[in-house]
Length: 215
Image 1: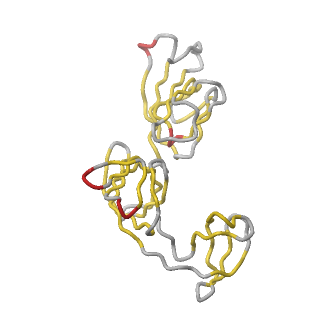
Image 2 (image 1 turned 180 degrees about the horizontal axis):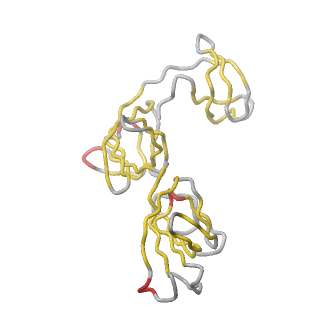
């Protein structure tokens, strides 16, 4: 969450004068020389030192949880649904905020970092996706499996997937509560697409099955 030594968030006079973008620091001394990673524009600017606040982070991954810490610049506002890179002793991972805990175990949708006691998160770079496969029209013959996939893998209703021993056509997708940007929580129209990190449950059918609604 905190800036690395080689990158900072700054307004770009060329492409983003009002909003900050990620800049690569080419020369850090005095009037630093930086290059915008969005448009490639190079310019000079003064980089202000930022004070960091250390926050406890609970990470949920594959049904298990572990504790870590994150350093966040003072003055930032963190909210449920935001994602950031967490550097832990075990690994560097992308996580999504699922809950923001402030004083007396009270939870908010968002809060300034100075008020946050614990961030509850889940790992989203590599995820387990619950899949229910219907081999034919009889529900009692359906089976449930878990798929291990990159978080940014896209599942699309109507597409055929081959993963390990599973071959299926996607008929419906349940979306997680902390996912944003979807028009509803249950998607079953052909062409509806969801990233794996946003999937609560995936529904599919074997090619030999007759299509039917999973709802």
